[in-house]
Image (tube, rainbow, N blue to C red; front, top):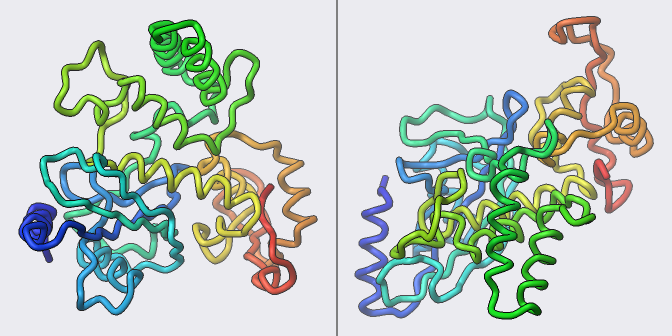
Length: 315
């Protein structure tokens, strides 16, 4: 197993002969205790990653190899997320261009083997402004909004000032704009542009206090934001949420998982009606006694829905 420093050294040596290197990065998501969790490695809040090597027969094979070596977890569901290739994205002094091909992977916590070098972190640790299940966080109303408005008013002219304020209002849902949970990446990039997150101030002196939320290595927090936005969008039209569920579950457990991912609450009766209309689940004939109250029916995902229609989700 190679740590980040060893792999970085390899890429630096390779950069003497080649101008470009390719990294494979995994955003591995699970849900536990009603919290969406992301798999991280090391002490520097990094996502599982490693260089694409000649011995890898495919990109996915290389990614699965690195994740298993670094975390002890074998990936199940996986899809390509995005390719990052901006020249200044790594934030160090290397002269080579580092291209990162990212993937979104979904896991169940009970399938993940133990490993002292990995941790499951709530993604709201890194993006505390994204969780609105208990209402609008004070972080948004008391810190973020005033700081963003101050940043907007500091633009060079009135036109830019108005444009900045409009972008902030759309991203964070103020000035009569509705909150859109899918704008996770836009919100992070706006905070980066405004110099309010640690990654934006690397090598520079901050002009004020940075907002809460730990930085990640390189641009891994941007990659994580991309993964969150993709998953929040995809659960609405594809039944990928069931990749995160145990084999049998109650409808309340399913609802809480969807709410954890979306960062907002949903109407209980409307949610159940939609699940039934979409024929996404079927009864097992069993009851759960772990609800703390009346026993609840247990359901399982109805896999036949994947063959019946191309689009099915939680809307």
